[in-house]
Amino acid sequence: LAKAYNATKNNAYKKAFNKGLECILKSQYSNGGWPQKPRAKGYFQHITFNDGTMVGIMNFIREVYTEKNYNFVKFDTRKRCEEQFELGVKCIIQCQIKVDGKLTAWCAQHHKDSLEPMGARSYEHPSISGGESADVVYLLMTIKEPSHVIKTSIESAVEWFDKSKITGVIYKKVGDDRKLMKLDDAPPIWARFYDIKTNRPIFSGRDGKIRYNVSEIEFERRNGYAWYVKSGEKVFKAWAEWRKIKGS
Image (cartoon, rainbow, N blue to C red; front, side, top):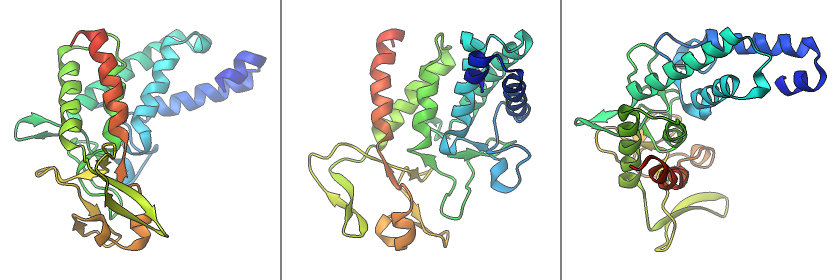
């Protein structure tokens, strides 16, 4: 809509853009988190990192207050975007899971008030996410002048990704099924979910029971969900660049 307005100067596009932006800004909780959707109920009301919800919103509102393509937005609204982005960063820092006094990474969703890790669908338990956490820490690395607290958060998350990588195996399609198979020179992968206390990969079918081997859940969920991810590759690549720039 912003591009359409800039190209045509049609005020209908500008009005629609501003209404959408206002909806996004109003949906933020006072602690800085965003739910999966406005006026949400059930697990949708949790602070949602799943599917890139919160990170996507924060990247967008940062564009609004930093890029000239959005100069048509009122100054006060752009300033508000900046303030709410910063509040979102504070929420991210507060949500980072601590185990035995040590910071790790994030759950796919956190309670809108207590910020505790929360489950969603029956097979999505409170856990440390090897998937969603990658985009979260990547967002923190894009902050130009990170505070000591932000740097500590990044360093701790990267350490967790390093500790949690799975080597010597590959998760691949074999016939009409997916299987975890040994492969000595396979690149590292990460489980989508890790048990918070033990950091052990966990899996679950629609019955909601936690299992520790992906082969133990039903065929439909085993093949219909991303139980292993390569998200850590993005983290380590960004980390190598971040350390050069920040001198960490």
